[in-house]
Length: 106
Image (cartoon, rainbow, N blue to C red; front, side, top):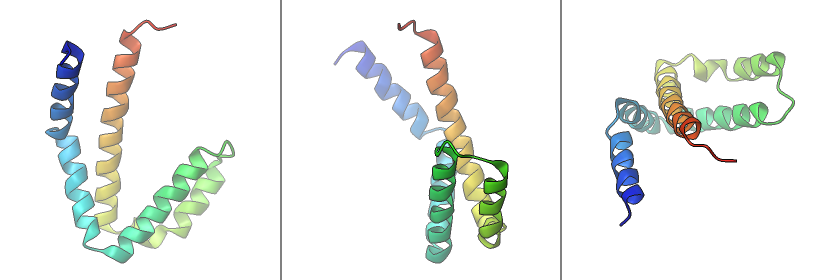
């Protein structure tokens, strides 16, 4: 096993033991206990992702989407899940950005 492979395994272990990942998994499991709510949250996440990546994003469309799902978004379990997911995603983005910034690749 190369040195890189060993370090990648250590990085994976660090991610799996991070507070951000633990929080995300915990909140995801809580949400799974509410299948109908989880289904709505997954639909909101899918449509939000599509909107953000469509090249046709607008604040009006984002507001409209949030209004459409306002009943589920105001639930404390949903807020906790989305906050935990965001914290985990930000950690991963920062890590990837730090790695990319440190490497010269043309």
